[in-house]
Length: 277
Ligand SMILES: Nc1ncnc2c1ncn2[C@@H]1O[C@H](COP(=O)(O)OP(=O)(O)O)[C@@H](O)[C@H]1O
Ligand SMILES: [Mg+2]
Image (cartoon, protein in one colour):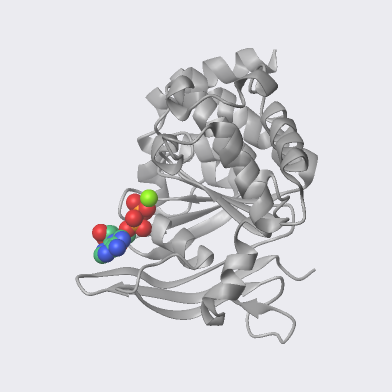
């Protein structure tokens, strides 16, 4: 089966930094790929390259094939599309959530209108009432309690975990095929983090969604991904099934990421186990 996304020999260079140096990876339909690596290893710029959101300072080479193999006539090379085509793809086929939910929401707009606006951006034929109904359903799907009543509330009236749920609702409202989650739980405390991870896994299974799940924390990635690519200084140094990477990492760098994990892992497994119970 052709991959949903295939990145081939991606290079991203800024005037002062070579951020990504020949990265290749693929994500299959419905698969969760974890991308892990220490801060500064090039995870976020890789995600931004997929979304077509790197600024003009970035020099980019290689291929990012969407819906097919790199180099095949059936796939679309995201690095060679006009902005208008990328804009249509964003949200509708590929959506992204970021680490800090407060900065991604407009503080002076109600959350209901922000979710509804996202829906209408891609389905302009919807009436205001239809968009509102979709938005409430999307908020209910991410377990925002009392969604219809809270539709008119502003971002600051929600907790950090709820704001991240709202962003997940916005990301998924148009049923994308791929969700890029860049450190989506890093800003949250441990218990809330476990709940948001559980929600992401549940939605992923429900919708057969493919996901690129980015984190500096291998233990967190291990809770969500089935396969992991380990990134260091702009390159993938090891890739494989999550279970194998966690039990018998081949690369010294992966072992050092794992060595940093145990204390965090015990702390984080507890709330997750409670949710599963
Ligand atoms: N807009 C930018 N301009 C210049 N350098 C950047 C920019 N964005 C990222 N970088 C550099 O690219 C490298 C990778 O950054 P990033 O992808 O954000 O790392 P990660 O997400 O893995 O922590 C870093 O060295 C960072 O300083
Ligand atoms: Mg980052």
